[in-house]
Length: 318
Image (tube, rainbow, N blue to C red):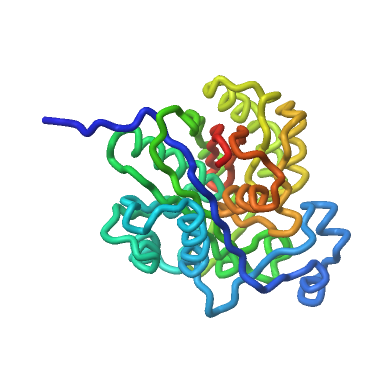
């Protein structure tokens, strides 16, 4: 029996992102439910978010983001041999999204699978892509986080409808002579799984906000610090901290405890809302596009959410 020889390391070659055109402000939501701009901003920090229309699926979002990442990478669709789609909001579980997204992008016969770690999904998928390359199972991997949360959220539920939104972010991961994606630190708190859930196929997303807030602000900064330690990086060396865009108060609490004072902290939630598995690549892609972070700098990613699952790793910014 033989095993393939993998690459010494893996790196992100390029990012891409996509958001639907429909901007929904806090004032727009106040016309539907009992809320207001001050209440929403003071609790979660969101000013506006994007909602996909009925004609736009989570596959459409993924194709747009994946296509942009692929174009930015300079690779051809034929160079991709594995597609991983991180999502927790497919309209139906079968067939998977990855195979259909790959087909629409012109990627021929790749390995293709969906991964559900909810809001931590992109970090899980990125780790899987890196490990596949280092093990020799894949050469070039397209990783996409895509969510159409609005098809699973009750617009009349103030606890969720003001938070969740739609969007997609993607990354092209390739071999590297030196490691540019650090070791993943991941885990779960299954005893708290009921804090974020969809009860059954006829139910909407339910979230116990206070439970999630307490867990996120107390349990996750040690995970982020451990990811830095495993990568041999001090928080002071980070150019960016890109946590899941769950809640602005959560983001700022974790950032303070991390002590990455020189890092640019992603606050994409203000204009994008919570897009679950799409939030980290969407936020970092926009930061790169807007020149907020340096190419070659180090970014700490931290995903967390339903499950309750979490994952964190340091990457080199393309």
